[in-house]
Length: 335
Image (cartoon, rainbow, N blue to C red; front, side, top):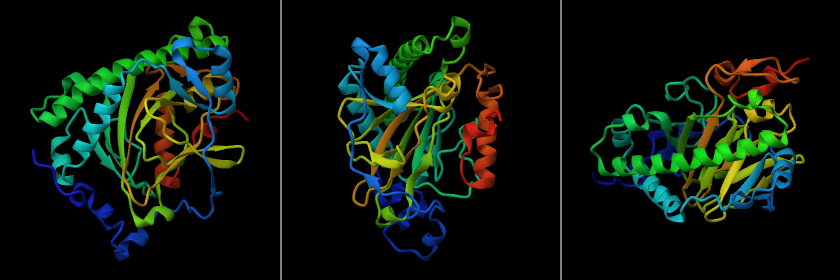
């Protein structure tokens, strides 16, 4: 399969990022960058060593930051490197090729990170995010039948990677449950490895980097999110009323506390608000893993009325379509 020019690989509307097309002003996301505080220089975020896991350090990072850098995670650096290389090869294909090649159970999307349960992009959202992505439900990955060599090889890399991530997420959640004094009944259905999926994101470069976001500010809906970002950077987190740049460090992972974990912890742990800034010169790739409670499992908390993840997801999609952004946990908070 021949690789196409870089411009042809992007969704048509993205091709105008450097072209000054008249319609581009209508497609800027309304989440004004001027209204946001300027990003501060990168700061050292907490580091957690999976090989010698400290419950104290883990708990402090989850309470104060909602995010930490994971080292000694046991994933071979060669696997991380191969994943990034294959992601670049796949996304360098023409837009039309990707639409025809990437079929169920995978899905290809762009313009929004909010997907329906089937993996399709949520249409009708008021704001555009300057990204395109590949959605990979890991439990369904064996169903993928493709003779394309790039996709075939990528599938096996993703399967191997997903097994590592399930191991890491389960280990971390068990440690968090111990820190939070969750009983076996409270924690047994709150993280289910079979719900895990991977999203591979590509963010285009462009002269609009000061006017639009790669991904607008949000919190993740997951229990935990685990991010493998390339060396371009652009991830920012909100802490102490200011935005902080999170610089990439090779062979480390970033672990985000998600909304479900915040609710499970009775707000002891915080779901970190974050966003992605576009780069003027280089495209950016990130490979993200998200894991959720078991299907139908109700979250019980003293801070929120009982809800399932399915109910939460439906509310997020409704708000995104009608308001242009996610409201999240506040919809379920007790008065």
